[in-house]
Amino acid sequence: MRRLLALFLLVACAGPKPGQPPEIVFGRHECARCGMIVSEERYAAGFVGDDGEPVAFDDLGELLALLDAEPGLRARAWARDLNGRGWLRLSEADVVQVPALATPMGTGWAAFATREQADAFVSARARR
Image 1 (cartoon, one colour):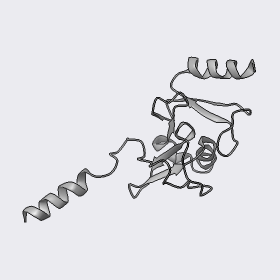
Image 2 (cartoon, rainbow, N blue to C red; image 1 turned 180 degrees about the vertical axis):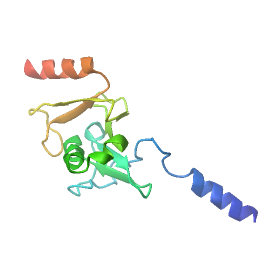
Image 3 (tube, rainbow, N blue to C red; image 1 turned 45 degrees about the vertical axis):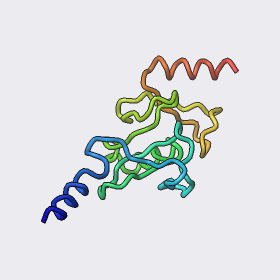
């Protein structure tokens, strides 16, 4: 009986909690849209699927394309901060498209924690 209880607790505690970012293993998970391995953390995005499994994207632009078709997923969507500060709720992130930004699929989309960071990035790219 104790083993069964321990197993139940282990399963209940495993996996992401509601409202948490997806647990993507970089270099292992595949992009849900194109099938490429998600390896560049700063461009990654995703959400937790209905089954509790991570749904990963190697490029924020690919997640945004899915959200155009399925806007109900937006509340569960996350993106990596281009400045390397971890996951950002997509609904709270400042997202910009910079065509010259070489993202994995060439979409140029990036997420930032603040509008100031996004504006500074765009301004710095414009001066190049």
